[in-house]
Structure formats: structure tokens, C-alpha cells
Length: 357
Image (cartoon, rainbow, N blue to C red; front, side):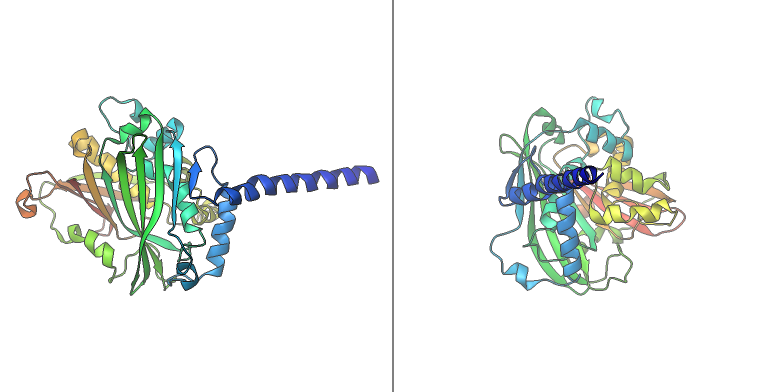
């Protein structure tokens, strides 16, 4: 009996040592360099731990000067990446493109899909010691996406992903940070670029997802909010199911701590902010492509989106889109405005503008 217990204790000890070495020590050693290989990325367990430690030890809504004094910018690169067709199919199905979208001829990959490929790299950046904000409570207030070449180029071979911190800006509501995401072909030609503007609020009791009045970069994205809707607006009604949160986490492979920690509340039936900002933008672009044709989203294209109100599940939304007045913008290129609104009210969740780069 005593020998059996000793054997169990020894086995558990060896297993613990192995798990610590495989999931924590090796991940820590990987992040000693800013260039990673796609087949050797830090584990989610290690990144979760770093995220929680930073979230507990730092206050939201303020810059931590001890981080800004550390040398070097916060930038990480993953090389030799290859497209995950399974993840692409799940994304297309969840974002309204259809399960068979990747096999459709003459259609580019979804414009927001490369951001999914950057999610783990983004988690690495947010939990980095040199990142000057708390990773907890960051709210996406604005995003710009640009394609310089068809996103379909990512199918043709290996590519490189990069995420870097661009700028911090103190604002009345807290601190904004711009984070750049980039996908580059093996030849070195940039294919896709995006800039996320995240807000760390100094008032955590404020409804998360609502954009405060004095936000510098979001003001640049909000011009389309003031434009009146013409009479020829196209409207599409969509349902946001109760299972949206679980489905989005699985489909979008978004295992960020703040997303996973919210799942238990949804399992017990609490109404929660289930829809990702990425999902809201993707659904809008999918509906525009269905009704306007593939040329409306074809590269080179630039999209600016302003996230105004959070979207709760279950519920219903209305996606509206219309062509902007060309004379007003002094351009012959076609521009498309779009909104995602709460069904039955004028509350806007997302407002955006599509234009030619």
C-alpha cells in the first residue's frame, strides 16, 4: 500500500515538472526573442498566466512608467505561417459568409480573417512586460483595415504576421493605445494591414464598449455617424443567438482570458456582451459583399470602423449600408457607408466607411 502511494506521488511530481517545463519554461524561453516560428509558439496556459498577473498588478486607465522606461518597442513577428483551412471555414460560417465560402470562385478571403491569425500574437503583446497598460478591460473603439493585395495571396504559400504597439495617448476617459497588425507575403510585399485603437478606461464602472466623448482617434473614425441616411438604404435583419458567445470563441479561436472568463455567466443564462467587435465588423462586410458584389470589397480597399455601443445576446440587429455621395467626397471612387443598429431602435453598434485605398 505504501509503495503504491509513493508511486502515485512520484508520478504526479514528474507530471507536474514535465507540464511546467513544456507549457511554462519553454514558452518563457521562446519569448526571449521577438521573432517566433509558427510551429513553436508560447502556450495559452503561459500567456493566460502572464495576462492575469499583469491584470491584477496594474490599474486600468493609466500608463505605467516603469514599463515605458524599459528599452525596446513592443513588437513580435511570426514567420513561416500557413493558412489553417479549418479555422477559415469556421470563421466564414460564423461571420455570415457561408461554410463553402473558401471554395467559391472569384471571391477573396474575408477582409477580417487575418486578424484571427494574429490573436495569439496580440495576446503576447498585451501581456508583455514592456506593454504600458493593464491588459484587462481594454475596449475596442476604432479600427482601420487595409488590403494592398488580395487576401487570397495568403493561400499561396508561407507568410509573416507581425503585431506592434504604435502609440499611447492619454485622453479624458483613460489611455488609448494603437496596435498595428500586418500580414506580409513571403516575397516581402505587404498584403493586409490593420490598426486597432483600444481604450483603457479610468472608470471601470462605465458600460464597457461605450465610446466616451473625448476620444481623439475615434473622432477621426466617427465622421460617418453624422451623415444622414439617404432614401435608398439597404437593410438586412439578423439574429444574435443565445449561444453566440460560445460559438464565437470556438469559431474565431479567441481564447483570450477576458473572453473565456465571461463564458460561465452565459452558461447560466445571464445576458452578456457576447458578440465580438471583430464579428460585428465581419458580418457587416459579408452582407455588403452579398448585395453589392465581390467588387465592393475587392483589394485594394480601406475600411474604417467606429465601435459605439456593445452588442448583447440574444437579440436582433439591422445592418444598413448605402453608397456615399461621391461629389461630397470629391472622388470618383465608390464609397460605402454601413451601420449595425439594434433592431427597433436607433442605437448604433458599429458605423463604418469603405473606400478605395
